[in-house]
Image (cartoon, rainbow, N blue to C red; front, side, top):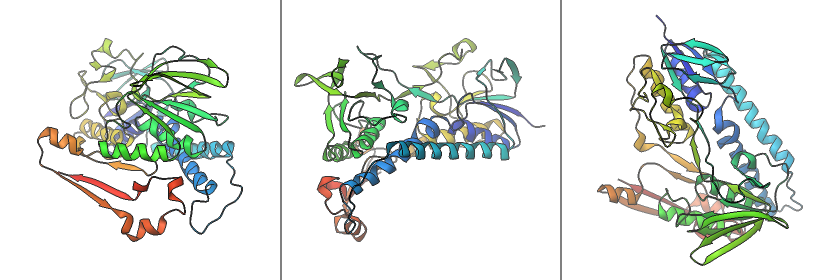
Length: 401
């Protein structure tokens, strides 16, 4: 007898879980009241990378930076870049919708909330199932400060749809989201500043890699302030006066926009989860290794459980939960989840950093290899590297345990 599974959320975790459960023989219903594809596809990874692609090409063209190619009069068409971004998002969202249909998943364009591990309220109706998978994703983490509600204060979702490219922007947050937007805006000629409360950018990455990222941004004209705390913003002639303090004392930067990019938080509020017995820690749903919650037959996958906020990790979790529901015992290794940051150059990582290996007592070796003498990077090097990338760009770095 086929099992009935209801998935709440149509992002990477949700649609991967729905498709996997259906392939394993379940009758699956997926409820999503926003765009199929979730944050990653609609207002996260995909649109950001579309604009970064445009920005990278524009920077090379405007600097005449590619050896043997001379371009004059390079012009940025921001509305066209947004249109291409929207076209890409729409096409991929339709593709995910087609995958769901082809796998027999019923999609409801409704907000849904779990009543238990066997019942869901969606569109005013109560739906029954053998299991429910919660995949509600995440949302931009708020930051409270004087002036937070002023016009010109935006988050990452707003930044992806600005009608007009600003002349200047201050980014609060030097994590993954912040440095990617700093790369984007600076490559488009926007005067960009980053304020990060930690002692370095990308505080969760290897310190040496974080240093390379800072060098790269600063070589593109980005003003980086680490160990700095935002103290407020107020309207000023020419935009916003953004106040912060660091070890040198109080400072202020005037910019058109203040982009708050301090991370993301599980999207679990307003669902009544604690009322039905779900344990939350700082908004994140607590689960076991198969992503089961404390409520029988209720699972939570992806960003809503706060464990690894990456799209591919969310998909793996969704497939794991679906497999467990359908009688399989899949395993997922959370110690080897790869990650990539789309700075210039890009950063990739998997597993522990050297510091983490040392702290855990793991024997490890740190290796560094300079690519400046090998054919590929030498043949690809730009005509005037110093204007776009730092001298240490052509290096690869790894650590092994």
